[in-house]
Image (cartoon, rainbow, N blue to C red; front, side, top):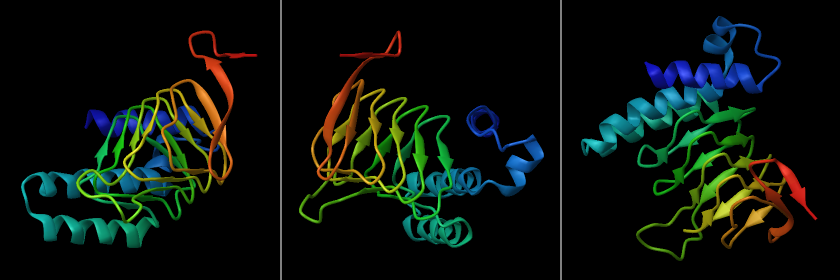
Length: 179
């Protein structure tokens, strides 16, 4: 119940269009996707793999957001305009992450074992970002729209492009750019 309250509050804090708790509960597919993920993940951890995948696919049908029940999702995830998001089985998403529509946390097809990325805490993944392979995105990183990330991104940076390159370093505590 605490995760639900935190997620609702996160949505209200980050989306000025969220006018009430009732509106968030009834109309935000990102919240619905996280709730379905929590149920599917519960069964996945108990090795009810097929049942957990059925629940996950039902959630994808209802929300347009696919989160594999084996993924690890942190607290206060904010999914804004979530249509087309895909989060793979071995992906790990930290706390206080913001994900916009069209983001993929996927594999390359070449890896075994840990095949999907690890996203640090307080990371922003803008629209249509593709993060591919068992790489890490550091805490407080910001990835610009339509970037394709195929190598590690350190903490406290902004990266953009195809392939993603660092364009700005940030001093997190003061939230100022280092020139």
